[in-house]
Amino acid sequence: MSVTAATGPEPRDIVAVVGQHVTLMPHTGDRLRGVCPFCGSAVPAFIVRPAHGTFHCLRCGQGGNATHFAAAIDR
Ligand SMILES: [Zn+2]
Image (cartoon, rainbow, N blue to C red; front, side, top):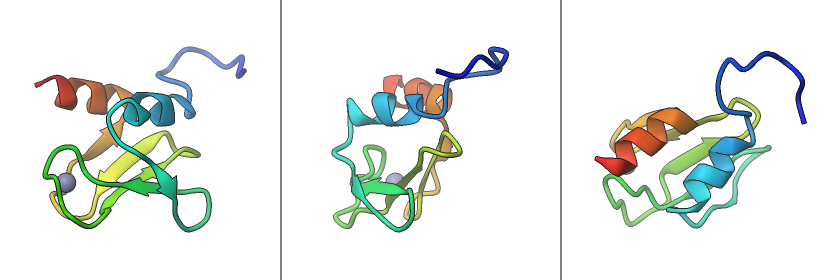
């Protein structure tokens, strides 16, 4: 666990948060991908970057960090 100041969710949190809504598969490098829960694109255009704690959909452009995801999925 990181001991750095609480400036936001731990990078790994993006996987835990997104993983509750999206089935994530290995992608290039340390990235994961899955079907976007926002636009429901048939192709897995939803990219998660655990090292950065961010996600981004190549299809609809939705993106941000774990906090953004939680807020958007709750809408
Ligand atoms: Zn999308």
